[in-house]
Figure 1 (cartoon, one colour):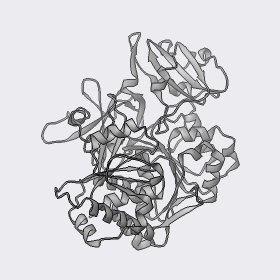
Figure 2 (cartoon, helix red, strand yellow):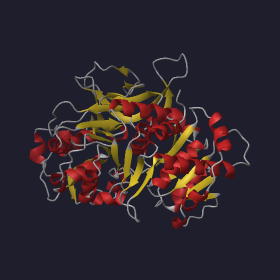
Figure 3 (cartoon, one colour):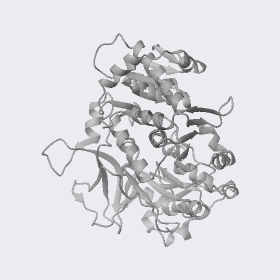
Figure 4 (cartoon, one colour):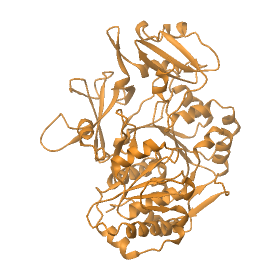
Amino acid sequence: MLTHVYNFLEKSVENFSEKIAFVEPFAKEGKKEITYKEFDLYSKKVASEILRTLDNDTLPLQKAILIILPKGIDCLISFFGVALSGNFYTLLDEKSPKERIEKVIEVLKPKLLITSKELKLDLNLPTLYTENFKNFNIDENLITKAKESHIDTNLLYVLFTSGSTGIPKGVSIAHKSVIDYTFWVCETFHFDENEILANQAPFYFDASVSDIYPNVACGGTLHIIPNHIFAFPAKVLQCLEQEKVSTIFWVPSVLIYFANEKELKKYPLSFLKKVLYGGEYLPAKFLNIWRKHLPNTLFANLYGPTEATVYCSYFIFDRPFKDDELLPIGKACKNTELLVFDENMNYISPKEIGKKGELYIRGTSLSLGYYNDKEKTKKAFIQNPLHDNYLDLLYKTGDIVAYNEFEELLCYGRADNQIKYMGHRIELGEIESIINSHDKVRNSACIFKEEIICFYESKEEIDFRMFLKDKLPLYMIPKHFKRIDSFKLNQNGKIDRKNLYNLV
């Protein structure tokens, strides 16, 4: 029985010890890579040093370990080292403002910091530096003891998302959830030791879990591409070509950006067999550009909140879609159930086509709650309203969905992005999907400030009145359209919608 994510690494060390596990193709000192055997060795060194450092604490509780490092191999060694030590990690962006770091520390109360001397952090915490990893000694006795006391409901990581009150929310994810998700990814997308992945998501963003753990589980090779390199599509596409990358898990904003670039046409990407995306809405228009360029490649839309361990539903594209169609988020991943309820908590069945409600999730994938915040946890994780026979928690996503004629789910956007205007309930995401189908629009976002305002990214001013006349009812057509050169993105690569209110 598999209970620890480190079991994935042990299996791959056994089968592929000399194979390259991780690559930094754009490292400062030139291409940097590490084999499974070396990665295991360094992870054990870090785990041993963590256990030695925290040896004076005798309580049978997992300890929070804060990691502040750039995306790279040292960061991944830290993840696996922390996991092997029996503790859990939180990663923060090395560019995080000091105020945010302090707020996270206040909630997390970490016992240890792992960082690099180059970052010159002074957080008044016991600290391990990546520069010293090679000098740490392995203590097999300490590691064995930590492994023997491990259970699969132990936390693996706490990922902090932005909270509405200004205090970050720490989403607590257990080993069992990541193990379950990893098995699902490998099974659904047929991962094996020949898999070559190119990582796009920052490691402090939960989408990166899709790259890291399935790669280790199948014995593949993961190329870690720095965030800033994605501003140069030619460099990234050239990397995919040269390294014979077979799979990418990317966010839609990057796929949109690359679809608009002439560079895409220069690279056949003949080795790229799976393009998986999630994290936000992708207009069908851009999916069609990619599908036309790669007609023999599998494309899949994955959906899910951080609270459900990365993704909880998926749709593998098996039919054509028009440019103005809303793309499905599909059906539940294995060992997950998706339930839809209306505003009065009446269940909406998959047979009730087009009836909108809020999506709730149940299953092994669910977070164990928000770290050190019982109040927020109780609001978001509720007892299944269909019964009260035993504890059966659902996560309230806040997303508005409806079933189509194939019993696939369509997502219309956030409930807090749903407005009531002129007596009508309107999902702003529905408006955006139509505007995004315009051939001169790169992307769009709508906000409501007494009236519906649409921001759109385009090289020229567009008169949308005739375009929308036959596509949207009058009350859904925005009153104002504002052209911008490019959207400001948040740290996860999504449109920073809060910033749009400052532009009105």
